Amino acid sequence: MIRDITIGQHFPGNSLVHRLDPRMKIILTMGYIVLLFLAANPGGLVLATVLLGILYRVAKIPLKLIVKSLKPILPIILFTVVLNLFFITGQGSPLFEMGFIKVYIEGVRYAVLMGVRIVLLIAGTSLLTYTTSPISLTDAIERLLSPLAKLHCPVHELAMVMTIALRFIPTLIEETDKIMNAQKARGAQLDSGTLQQRMKAMVPILIPLFVSAFRRADELAMAMECRCYRGGEGRTRLKQLRLTSTDWASFGVCMVIFAGIWATNLLFTGL
Image 1 (cartoon, rainbow, N blue to C red):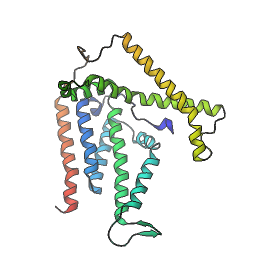
Image 2 (cartoon, rainbow, N blue to C red):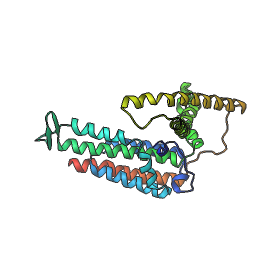
Image 3 (cartoon, rainbow, N blue to C red):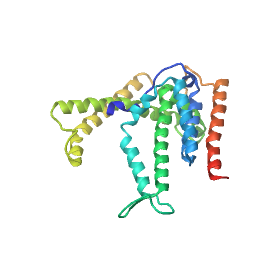
Image 4 (cartoon, one colour):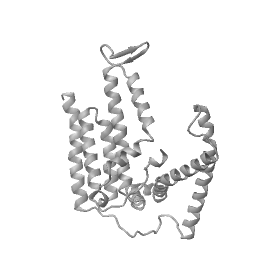
């Protein structure tokens, strides 16, 4: 299951989504996330799903990759759905009642909407990392946060740390998988026993994982120092970020769709 996690991975390509300015992709992704939680009806989420499906189609990234990446977080999604199902009350008689447990139609509706929101949230943010290289993400985040430099905020270092952390997620996942296989080869029972026994079995995995993470961090720091890295002051870039007409056209199309998603709230509430 660990191998199914694809967060932070980049899949090179030459599609329209890949060629968009990374700053524009970050802004549109943030707007998409906000709209997911503002959409309080099935119509808005349907439009958001269609938009995401079209973008994945244009980027030529198979949808089965998203299904595969959702497997590790499926318990979190189910826990959120069940939590909303049993704790959201409504008017009228419940659909199901057993002791103190009552399930209302409002709870079912809200649980389904919340589950779909989480799936779309993960798929939407994953599209950003799938189609944008870590270097481009670093430059985009630094440019977007550049106004904070006037407040003496270390913008370049902050962007670099965020991108490195995102980039090392696949590396740490691969390292965890190797350690787990090594422990299983030594007879460790990681997939059986009670919950307490499984938690204790994770200790021999976490310790070498932390040691490996600190060693990789030290090697990365050493490599950056050997290359005379001194932060963002006076640093030049091989590729300059420039917004093109394609970026603005994509922004306009997405804004129209975002407005349609927002308009569904007015339609469904009868305003």
